[in-house]
Length: 484
Image 1 (cartoon, rainbow, N blue to C red):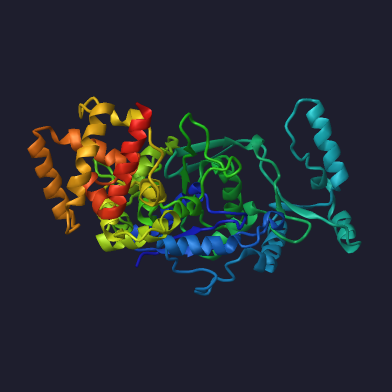
Image 2 (tube, rainbow, N blue to C red):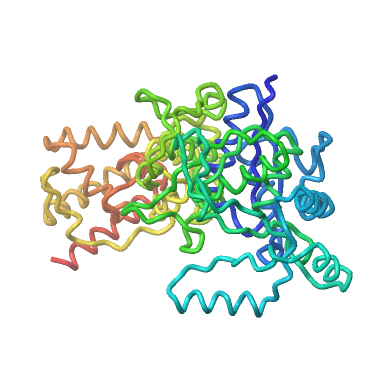
């Protein structure tokens, strides 16, 4: 077992969007590919954004996806609590220690003063930045304010000259001018830390060696490194991930309603396919292979394969990959997964196992199933133009004649087995001396009312049963007659 430890540290602010899941997956794979440990920590210090039930979503998603953490809220290995709101005293201790070390200071500025400062800067067309007013306070002035119970925050004292440089495992050498680094708040007036402070303290105390997060934090990382340096701690390895964008380059966004893990899961995307596809959003295994199980990803994943260019979420490719996973399912597993969708569309007693055998190679997403089988419940509305098929060389008049001749043939089948139906109809076609499509296309159209169906005419006839098949052929005959 190596000493590598990665962590997934989500905020319970809603659902698990795809970017969150990718961060969790890469963190998991970095640890597992190198024999390390994967930890879960809940970052809930921003209580205003806390969403009831969001923590359950985090636990449930990791469980469904098989991303088992070695350490976390319910697996304390001596580094807990793993929920940040339960670690308030730890942050206060380290914030005050930073003040004592001369790398942070108390700030007593009121909201009114800060709002006024912001308004003045905006009027000048300048971005907001705290002006460092409270850095000028003497020790005596600070103590007097503390004794008087004045509310305060603790701010990090940033260098204002020079350049901060660090190495990122994906983006390489990153340089940030120190004059762009604001004296950020570390400890808020309610005694809770900001994200920027809490994650540094926790990552160090919990032994995290690899930090995976979005590339929007590239410019913030020097602030974290100044904290590490101030405490004399070793900074972790940083792995910043590129954005995931939609077609056209727009970033995937929870605010824009882009789908979450549970959205895709509930729509009938398989967990294995979701994990596989998300793994390829910004990471390349090398070579042409694209299908990987989670176990296989654990074996081949490498930080070196992570790209620094935006990853495009291609729904068409995602659907294709999900379809590949459906094809790989055991027939009995696919049938079990399909049953809830049959219940949405069918009340008729039919051979569902046979339907599953026809559907498995065609379906890309399980939620498509009701649309595939709706005609079994009730024939779709006929359209006379559907009986005209150039490739099959069928016409409306010819289809009427074909269906009329088929009725006694179907009535004469005593043993309504799929084999008998097929044998009888193919013999009928041979007796007529026509191509198969001349008979099979009008029959399938009459039975389904659809241009595309799982299975052909004889399979559908078997599934519908003898009485329903003959009934629908007669309905189609009457419809065509009325259309001519």
